[in-house]
Structures are given as C-alpha cells and as structure tokens.
Amino acid sequence: MAPRLVGPLTQKFRRDEEGHRWYDVDWLVETETQHDTIAYILFNWPLFAVGSQFNLAAAWPEARGADPWAFCTPELNISPHRDIPESSPVRYWIVSQTWSTKQSWRCQTFPIENPLFEPVEMSGDFVHENREASVDRFGKTLKHPNFQPIKGPAVEYKYSYPTINFGFNSLTLPLSTFVELINHVNDAPLWGLPARSVRFTDAKWSRKTYGNCTYYFNVNYSFEFDIAGFDRKVAAEGSTCLAPGGNPGDPRAMIPCKSATGENINAPLDHLARQLTIAGYDADGSAMFSYPQWVQTPQVHHQGNLLLLGIPSSL
Image (cartoon, rainbow, N blue to C red; front, side, top):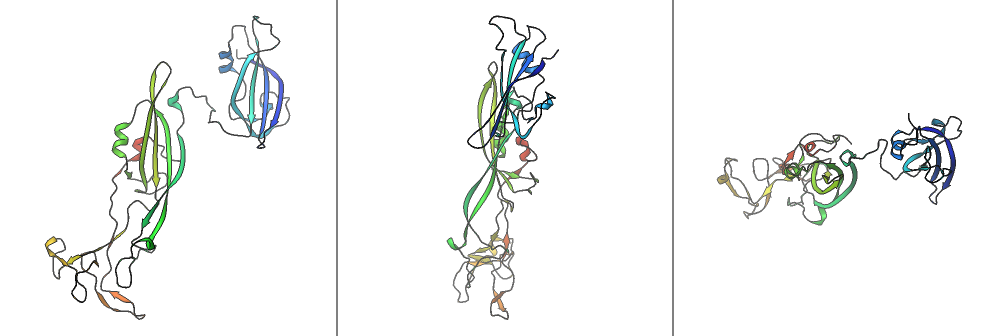
C-alpha cells in the first residue's frame, strides 16, 4: 500500500526582494509498516509533482485558496516525524515541499536519473560581420557613372546572423558525422527555413561518467541562419572579354577589354563574357547597355542532411 497522506502539519509563506512568492508546506505521511524506507516514500508518495500549481485541494480537499502562478519546485525533504523518539520504529514522516513563482529549474515533470535521457538544451545569439555589397536591394549592380563598380566602405554594411546552440548527452561520440558535416548548409528545408539557409558552424564535446564508471558524451552544436541563404550574388566583370564572333566556351577566345580610346580596362560583362557597350541614351540622358550585366550566385558551401547530427527536426 502506498504511503498515506494524513494532512499538512505546517504552512509558511514568504516573498523575496524581487517580489516572487514562496510557499513551504510540511506534510504528515504515514507508511504501512516500520520497514518502509525513505526511498519507498520518495517513489510511492501521493503528493504534488514538480511543476504542479499551488492548489492544496488537489491532495487535501478541505483546503481553500490557490496561486496559479506558483509551481512546485524540485526541492524536497523527507525526515521522521519530530515527535518520534530516537531509535524507535518510524511509520510517520514529514515531507516538505516548496512552490514558487520564480522558475529557475529544469523541466522535471518526470524525474531524470539517466543523463542520456536529459532533454536537449537550446540557446541562441547573434554573430556579426561586415560585408561589401555588389548589388543593391533590388538586385541592380552597384557602379559609378563611369560604369566601374563601387567598392570600399561606401557599400559595406553590417550583417547579423541569428545563431542557435544545442546541447545533449550521447552514449557514443558522433565524431565521424559532425566532422563530415561541419561548415555544410542544409540540403532541405529545416526549422521552417529554406534549403541552404542554415549553416553548421561548430561542434564541442566532452566525456563524462555516471554510475559505476559508465561513460557518456556531452555534445554541443552551433548553427547560423541566413534567411536569404549563404550564396552571395556576384556581378560579372573582368579585364578580358569575348572576342567578336568568338566561342564563349573557349578561353582562347578572350581578348583584353578596351575603352573607347583603345586602352585596356576592367569592364562589366554579360552572361557570355561580352563586354558591355553603350547602345545609346534614354530620355533622361542616362546610358543604356545593349545587354545587361550578368549577376551569378555561385554555391560555394557544401550541403548535407543536418538532421543526421541528431538535432531536433522542429523548434
């Protein structure tokens, strides 16, 4: 038979300097025999689970009043009833529980003894870098009136990557998996983000022990997000271009780009490596090109299935 709840012996309340409310309750519990130990009470008691609201009527029907924002903490104390003489058989115990509006403990609705069953820990942050843009927000190439690209601080901007970190325990070390996938981007949508917008950036691990020299590993992964993807737009330009009538697939068909006066220059190019030339002027006097400058988006980062790392498929 499970230990029987007799009722509360004492109740105490306090409010700390931050305004959080704390409730302490000492319960009187009776065991069936004097052979029932503290461990028997711990695993068979009929009291409140960690995270339950402060509403004593759930175990003591006569109780009135509740605090829906105070939750049962993991704190617990079990001791023999103070009126029991020393060395006497014990059947009555005092079980102390605490409720609080300050939530600083981990989820313990179900007690966790095996570290391999610990839930995955998550945290986030931002990392920052300076970038030099080659196109504007509309996708147009950034260039001066002389058609040379705009470079330097004038087109640099600060970019912030959201990051997320996962920490979990594993019986084995997934070394071969994260060594293969480090610096890869996702090959399919992940966490509501499109493919090639999540980058696996870091992995840390340490070996730990529990029980009788049983080893396990604590593994931590870091990821960066870029909703626009990690593939950068690059406007085509160069000092050589396709000769008239040349084969764009033949490197020998490339000749130096020339200015109107015949000087060698670095010039914008189209998708066939032809040098852009001015075909005329529109109504407001600005120059028009005979064909548009080519903008490509090379995929530099390798991609892979990041779920092979054992990370959550949803957040």
